[in-house]
Length: 104
Image 1 (cartoon, rainbow, N blue to C red):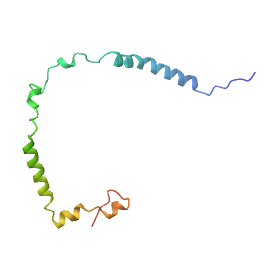
Image 2: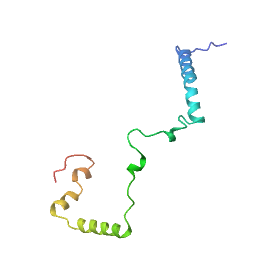
Image 3: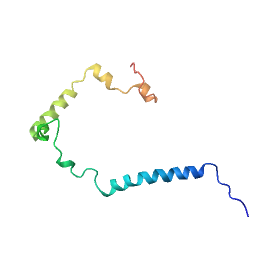
Image 4: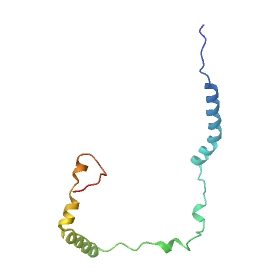
């Protein structure tokens, strides 16, 4: 019968893995089965008096949105030679050199 050759250190590795698993298993099991802080929604804030202090304003109405879109289109249509030059793709980036200093 042939002798089985066990690589050196494999028992140590197995023992270390089992030891780590034994200590990590309770933490993993708790995080899956129950929340860590079940009463977190009841905590009082420290830095602000209430979350109501930081409410965003309501979105603009349809007329204000249309006016903003029209303004953006008019502004974009006012291209100068400088803005036209800057909006062209850089030839060095077209050659596959991203982030290079474009001098065109």
